[in-house]
Length: 318
Picture 1 (cartoon, one colour):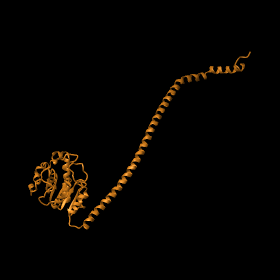
Picture 2 (cartoon, rainbow, N blue to C red):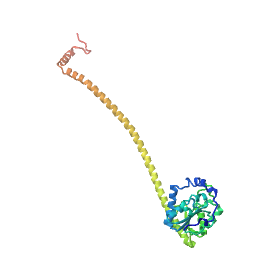
Picture 3 (tube, one colour):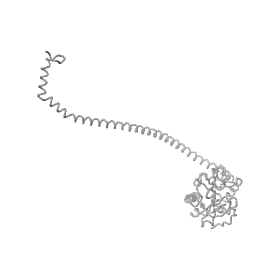
Picture 4 (spheres, rainbow, N blue to C red):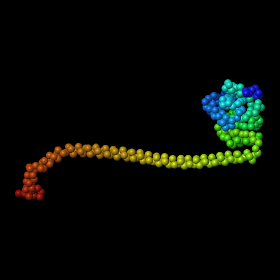
């Protein structure tokens, strides 16, 4: 069944949420029908269908209607509205009958199984935040809510608050965070709040149980961080040892080069001496022949006979 977009009071679009805003003021990238943005809303729609399984959903502040189209593509009866006429004009053609221009402060046409309100209320004046939360709570018992606690730089962020502020507003209206489901797939600070008739003593144990689980996870992570730090220290020691070994290797390479040079010098000297030996061998053979000859022996005998005939000074005696 198609929802009549005229059933919701028409709100005048504020000029600040025009083409320039969506091209330049929505984070690091232009807000358009790009692959990354569509994949983001695909993941959200998948999680909503599998983990919450609502039959009817309203996206309060739907911008270009990406979540509405992704939910409708999955068979969910989804609707959306946004204060920007420019944004609603960008809704996919077949989804436009289910989206309208309107304000989160204006009465909504019906109740829904789930209202999704992502990054909207921080754009309101502070005096408008409680009426906006009242309006959401009147039209659903289950709300998936996010509002940045960090981005003060964006010019239209008039009511940046921490999650505990919003949790307090919802709790005053009988809505408490569902601690059994992790909705960080939307934003790290996202919360799912549900209306409950349970008294506080039944709600608090759920918070405490989740707090204890998170505390244990933190302790485990701290231990892992300590282990990683120890591994980092050990890696630094290994790297220092490796650097020392590499320095020793470089020194040994230098010494080895010097030794190789000395070996080459000695080899060259040995070759030179070998060549000298080879040059002197014929002379040695000739000398040996002379020494072994008969004439040399005779000359030796004559020298021995003649020696007594000479004085100590080698002169012949008269």
